[in-house]
Amino acid sequence: FVTDATVSLFVAVLLFVLPSEPPRYLCFWRSSDSESQVSRGPAPPLLTWQVTQKKMPWNIVLLLGGGFALAKGSEESGLSRWLGAQMTPLHSVPPWAIAVILCLLIATFTECASNVATATLFLPILASMSQSISMNPLYVMIPCTLSASFAFMLPVATPPNAIVFSYGVLKVSDMAKTGIVMNIIGIGCISLAINSWGRAMFALDTFPSWANATAPM
Image (tube, rainbow, N blue to C red; front, side):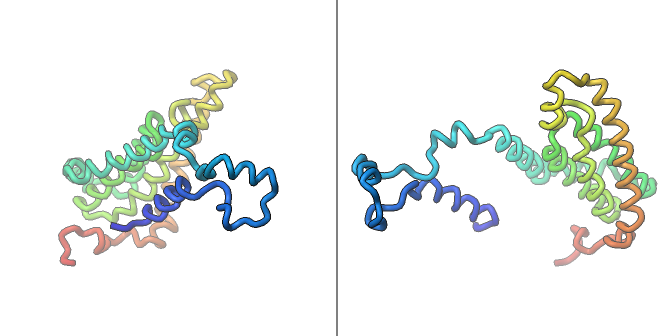
């Protein structure tokens, strides 16, 4: 089936096919030096597999792919629905408190895992939890998605932190003391925004029909 990724893959394959120099029959303005280069054989493609192996950040590919595979596996196996059902006791907790608790949880978890892996792991669970307690999924998914980027405290939380820490000027304790303040301020700003203009903009007080899995199509 054709998706948005099909276009990207098609362009990537073209890089391995298209030559790095125009064909000889299309160029009548070649100099003698160019003619000597043509006589040596066909021009190499724009991108070769050897260059791809050396320059391609395979760790990022595996990180993103693994995160999406983990989220899809949790959804297909029913793990997300099961974990969401275990959170039904939160039905008696006010929605704003649920959002704050989950933001704190995800902001702590993302200090030990990548932002993408944290978001892809937790968002399906939060969606299932919202359905089980009849709460608008956007009420928790929007602030929790933003909280997944609050990787301020540890060097392993995100590559920029590791780069700064590698210079040997900062200690882990320095990053932790500053990062925890930034996390608290960030979660406070998110909670204020989602409970003020966010509530009116996204109609968070109502349970949307698109989130009701049992509703007739």
